[in-house]
Length: 197
Picture 1: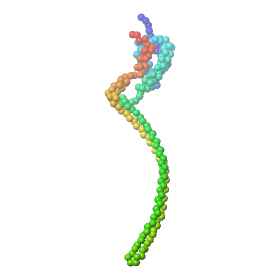
Picture 2: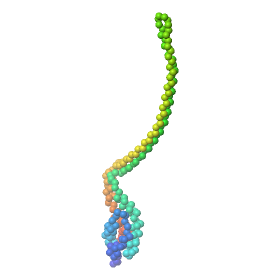
Picture 3: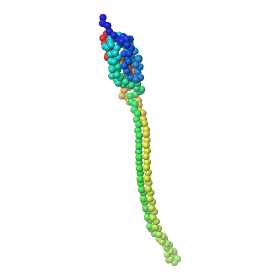
Picture 4: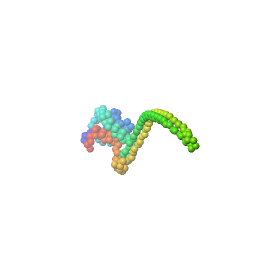
């Protein structure tokens, strides 16, 4: 029978093998380490020497960190699972108007009126002549500057009808089954354990 070493056995020998192991901020590193030890306890590891394993775990986890962070951040997003439309809009309207108008009007009136009265008794004519000579001038200048700035915003959200609420709810249930820590543990198994039973 061949002797082999598991990650749990190596950890019991040297518990510093996970010192260089990194996980995304917000994740519980000790919880992941304990689950790796538990789930891989019966599997042979490919690097049974503690210093090599420690450095390999550090290099591997640093390489994977960006991907794990993106997954972890995506799983932390807050949203309504039955809405597939969520849009915020802001508008800023600015209007400026300048008007200038001149109105000039001149009214000139000239005229005369002859008023004549004849009587029956003597044939004498009595007459008056009235003259009218008027000039009216009206000048109007108007200037105005108008400006207006308006801001408004809107939040449009809901289900636009492409996907039913039940389908979106089922997708939410499916995504909630994805656990980033389990993904990290599975990657650890594939990278450091001999998957031969």
